Image 1 (tube, each protein chain N blue to C red):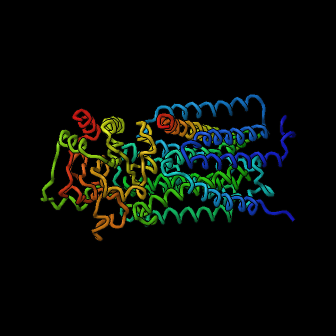
Image 2: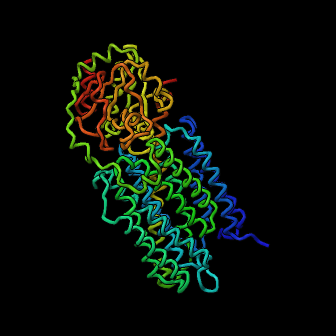
Image 3: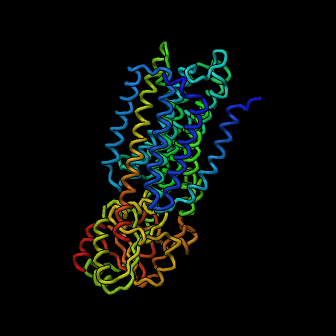
Length: 103
Length: 471
């Protein structure tokens, strides 16, 4: 008997919440802002949904609308990914400079 | 062409791998040394997820690939531009804006799946499977609330909208009404014609309205919590869509981001001694309620930059307490210069940061990092609080409510019970403030009238520069 996808992904979801819980508590408070921007960026992995929708051979009106909608999803998610990772990197660079000067 | 090469198992394993990379990205943030590597791992995780998805495309004709590439290029350019341009003081707005993007893409992906369910394998006998439908509706709800809520948060933080709470009459009734209507529409979709696009649209619009209603009554001081909560929502929206698409990377990432935002909201609430519920209900942080009627008559000692410079020069240890006012005045660099001069004189200078200083978690740390303040000099509330008693000078710049002794002594104070930085224990308190006005919580600060307090009434940046010159 096959396990239903809901239970399968549900189990992973629950375990991932626990992983998230412990990993996030280990983040130093000084880096809470980068934490927010980087989690922002990775949550934009939803881009895979947009790409899947773009890449289907669809037909009819709703198929066309679906493509248009997912094209916009693609743009929004890309803004989120690039903006999030790069702004995180920019912040972390600032922490780097000091570390050198201090040591 | 690659479809045959990528087996289902390989695809799932690679999505799992990108999930692992995302975990490591967050894990890296446990110290500034490992944080940058973590960020690169995060990027790699994203690249893996992206590549796997492209290799699995059904329609990988050249025009379609070009279309996808152009969408990513447009978004990528905008995102890159924003990330280079944003000032560190504006980071809360930036995060709110990015959050809204995430929420919106969740809504749009749910719509795309709703419009062409066959493409996502959601159809059973020509209808969308009930479980998938529930997931999509939830995705729409959470995604739309994230989007409109983040937009409002952005407008408030950017100053395009008043940061004071907007209290509608019967606001709870309205919110509950909107939410109930969403539930009814969802029921109608599930019970009846599954492909009813009109109902789906109504739910989307109502969800957007709900996000708006939830955030407008929340005041400026509660913004750190709001941003963290919306961050959490954006994660859960992604996770829900992950269930619809049966995608491991989305489910794992969504759970991580969801719990991250939830923990940050919790930390912020504890730091303000406010229950999560009362923040969400809103109405707090209304500037100018009460406080103003009672005219304060107690004497206040007001000093000049020269007075302050004299006191600082003769101190042997100084603790700086920065707050949102420093961010607004963009005073971090001038402050750093002032501190450098003090350090040259052999004075020990440290920084004390309250968890809710600023408009988002860790905001002050980033600003001080921008000004090249070594992070070893920066301490959290619990680490440094007992040191104030030994300090000669507590230099409060742009902070107010987080130093208010009323939080300990006055049970009637709205901030009673909130952990504060005990600056009043220092031998001298120098308090840089633009005027003798009240803080965001709308309450007077007893600290102003203390014997050992000297008020320095000026713009934070100008005051720091003037003190530097005097030293």
